[in-house]
Each structure stands twice: as C-alpha cells, then as structure tokens.
Image (cartoon, helix red, strand yellow):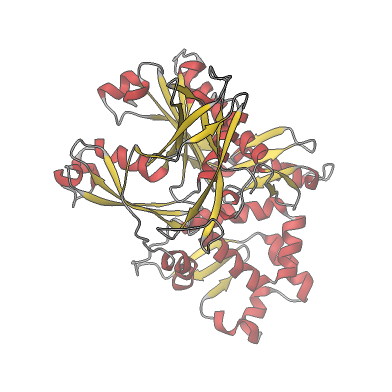
Length: 479
C-alpha cells in the first residue's frame, strides 16, 4: 500500500472466488491512520430473505452472449426464466463455479472454454471478464454512493488468487481483468493467503485468538497460513525477516479440496438415493428447484460441527418436485422404499423422509467433509525471499530485430540437462520488445527474472546503451 500512495488515492481488491465473490477498498489516508480500516461491499440480498457478505460467482448471459446478471441476481433471474413457460431457459448461458478450470486444466491457454449448466460452451476469458466487470462497476457505484468522488485512474485494482495457482492462471486473471476494463498499470495480482498474512500483522493481539502473543510477527517468527476456500485449500509457511518483510519458508501447497468438494459429496449422496435418471430429469426440467437445493445445503453445511455431539441429525429441505419425479419413475414413494427396499438397508437408521425434508444423521453429514479434510497435506519447498532476482544468459539481438523470444521450462530436478528430460515441462516464453537499436551490428540484452512476488517479472537491459526494454512472461502461449 505504501508504494501506491503517491500515485493512487484508493485501492480496491476484488475477491473472485470459486463459489462466492466480493470486494473491499481502502484509501491511502485511511491506511496511514489505521491499516485495518477497510470498507467492503454491502451485504448481498437474494430471494427468500437470504443475506450474505459475498454473492455467488454466477454469470447469466443472454442467448446472444451479452451480459444479463451476476451473483444472486443471476440465480434469481435464471430461476424466474426457468419457471416461465414462455421462455426457454436452455437458450441462456448460466455459469457457476467455473473458476477451477484455471487450476485443473493442464495446458491453459487463451482459447480454453467453460461449460454452463446445460452444457453450452463459451471462451472462459469472456465469462471471467463479465464477472470482474460487474464487480468493478459495482465497486465504483458503492464508492460514489459514499461520496468519494474519485477518478477511476486514481484507483489501483487488486485481484486475489489462490497461492497454488500456476503463473499461467495468474496471467489469465490479469488478462481477464484488463478485458473487463482495468488498466494494466493500475492492476496487481495478490495471493489470498499472503493478503491474509499481511492483514493479520496489523490486527490487535486480542483479535488473533486467546493463544496469540506479541511474538507472532517479531523477526524470526514462523507461522503457517491455511486458506480453506470454496475451490482450493492453500497452505503456506512464512517467516518474519529482520526488516519486517516476509519470507516464504515453504512453497505453497494444497489442492482442489475446498468447500465445493463437500457439495459434490452431498450431491453424489442425493444421486445415490434418487437415482441418476431422476436427477438428470430434475436438473433438466426443474432448474429453479435444483438451484434452491444447492442454496439449502450451502446454508446447512455451515452449521456442521465436526467435534460436537450435541446434534444427532440435520434436516435439509428437499424440493417436492424431486420426490414426485422419484414416485413417477418407481411407482412408489421414497419414504416407503426407504422402509422396505433392500437397496436402502444401510440408510434406514440414518435417513428419514418427510413431506419436503430429509432428516440426515449427523455422522452421515460429517462424511461429506471427510475426503477434503484427509487430502490436506504439506509439501516442503525452498525458501524464497520476496524480490529475489536471477539473471539469465545474455541474448544476442541482431540489427532490425523487433522482438526476442526465450522459451522457459521447469523441472523438479535441481540439475536438469535437457528440456526433454523426464519431469521437465514447458511453462511459456519471455517476450522482449526491441525498438530500433542505435548500433548497426545489433547488441546483447541481459534478461533479469524476479521471483518471490505474486507474479514473475522480467526486465531486459541492452548492455551497450544501458537501455531498458519492455519485457513480459507469456504463460498462455502454446508449446
């Protein structure tokens, strides 16, 4: 923040999450007085009186691909369209929980696509841009409502991303933000656990918990940051240096073990109970009820306490349409099958079906959390000091050459010999823009890569003229 004060009046951070999104902002003046004084978006309100500090990461587009709604508004509008017999909801694009494509796709590029709820595809960068643009404009409206008449060019924007994301995924989010109208020079990418770590440094000791002490952030102190999000779980270990800066002791580790894994376990359970054919028809013909079922479980799962024995069961509202589809398919009610069918023998003392609810034994509910909790582990890496630079071999540039390109590979082997070695993979390339040189014979460019920050940075220096050239990494190029 201190580095931005001279150029930017306000910093706005957008948390574009897998399941939920939101934003917060702080001015340079406020930061100087109290670094923890941060304003955020007002609570989002959905139908049925649901209120939340964040809104679902859902994008609704018109049949022609133009933007219609985001968040709870997108869910509610899509429900409305699905319930209207005069409209075909399958012609609209409804995207939800699409962010993980940036983590799961092995070879990420600008042409990667995501599927909406009915299987229609669209370029991911366009869907991301629609969501970021909505949050950006919503933040500007909130800022203006508060009477802060600030020019948009005086705002520095921050997009937060998981620590375990690849450099290609970070670059993808940067380019999506630029497509959404954020100026490149007014944009930073921040790692979510690092943002939390820095924030905690400024919190009063009593807010850090009863076991916290003043030594948490003293030079030499080490601590672990665990960020359990909707899509991913990030684990990092930081150390406080003598000058107060942070050093990453262990590289980020984790995986796709966020809250969505709990949701998926619940939906597998529901599918096992009702059957794949029933669930397929339910999602196709009762989309509004399907969305309500996801909302219901999202609320109920938050009250599950893994170490508490006070509650013996939990009631979850099940859409009547789902019970009716089961009865139409099997010719009998689910509650009757639960009592008599051998198929449900293992669930008889764990599930009770009523008119519009399913009462689930609390131990069964806890099993939905089992897999993501078991998958949490720690991988040890090498400590990396923020701002650590490594200079590569010099590049020879001939006269008239407009751009130099260097392909970059990564290897788990500390001493790799060839890019074809096992465990060696292509990352991307360095692009160096070379304006017309003063020397007819060309020259030599020294490329310096800076590690330890959220993104990798590169600078290129022409040794003879001492001129710096514009350089960048491109992790989204094809191999």
